[in-house]
Length: 497
Image: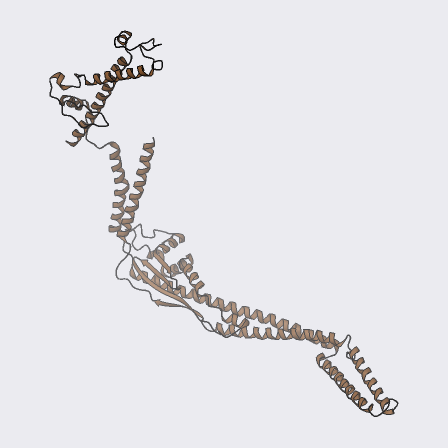
C-alpha cells in the first residue's frame, strides 16, 4: 500500500539518523584516548608528555611545533584505525549475516542499511493511522446548511410556483411638448412670450408626481386601488396589499407595482402591474389622464403668472408716466414756458443776426476808410454803429435770460432736458408694458404646453410577473453567501480559541 511504504521509509530514515549519532559518539572516545597518551606510552614511543597537564590531557600550547604535529598525526592514525575495526551492531559479517549492498554516499558520509527485521520492528512500533471519519462539527455544519439554505430556498421556490398569483402589465409612454411664440420680440414682451420653454423641468416634476402619494389618492378615488391590489388574496399573501391598509402602505404598494423610467430625451415610460390585465390597463390610462391634467394646470398657472406680472408692470409704468407728466406741467407753470428750448433757439438766432450785422458794418467801414479820413462824417457814423452793435451783443451774451424767469436760460434749459428724457423713458416703458400685457393675454388664449402620448396604454395577454426563476435564484444565492460568511466567522473564532 502507498501509505505503508511511506511510513516504512520515514521509519528507516529515523533509524539511520540514530545509528549515525551513535557512530559519531563512538568516534570521539578513541580520539580522546589517542590525543591524551599516558606518561608510559609517551616515553615508549619517544614523545614527551605535555607539561602542566594534571588530568592526562596534553597542553598543546606548551609543546613545540614539531611535537604538536607528531601528536596530531598519531591521533589521526588512531581514529582511522578505530573506524576500520568491525562493529557487531553495524557489520553484518560479525553476526554471520550476508553483507548488505553498498548505498550511495549522502553528504560525504555512508549511511548504514537496516536489516529486514529491524525495519519490521520499526514499523510495528509506529502508531496505527486510522481512516478519516465524520465528527460532530461536520454534522452540525450539514444541519445548518439544510436549515439556513436548503429549507428557506425550498419554501421560497414552492411559494413562487404554487401560490404566487400571475401579474399582468400595461405600458404607456409620453412626453411634454411646448410651443414658443414671438421669437422676434424683445424687451419685456420677448421675456413674457418666451415663457413655457422649460420642458426638461416639467418632465422632472411629472416623474415625481407619478411616484407621489397625491396621484395615489386621486386614482384610488376613481378605481379603488385597495380592491385591485387584493384580488389574489388570501391565496397570495406576499404580493397582495393586505387587509385594511393605510395610505402609506398603499403608496408603498403603488411604487412596487408601478415602474416609472425617465429617458434622456425627456420621454417618460410607465409600466403598471396588476393581477388582472384590464385593471393594469385602467391604471395606466388613469396615470396618463392625471399626468395630462397636471401639465395643463402647470401651463395655466404659468399663463396666469404671466398675465399678473404683465398687469403689475403696466400699473407701475402708468404710475411713473403720470408722475413725470405732472413734473413737466409744474416746471412749465413755474417758469411760464412751454418749451424753453424754443426760447433758447430764438435768442441764439438774435445773436447770430447781430453778429452778421456787425460783420457787414465792419466791412463797410474798411471800404470807406480807403478814400475818407477819420474826421469824415460817414466814418464817425460807421464807428458809432459798430459800437452799438457790439454793446448789444455783449449784453445779450451776459444776460442770456428770459424775461420774467428766475435764473439764466442755460440752467432752465438743463432742467427741462432732464425732465424731457425721463418723460420719454416713462412713455417707452408704458408702451412695452402695454404690449406685454396684450401678448400675455393672447398666450393665455391657447395651449402652449401639452402632454403628447406616443404609446397608448397596452393590454397584456400573457403574465410576465413575478419573475419566479430570477427570484428563486437570487434567494438561493444570497442564502449561500450568508451561510458561507457565518461558517467563516465560526471557524475563525474557533481557531483563535
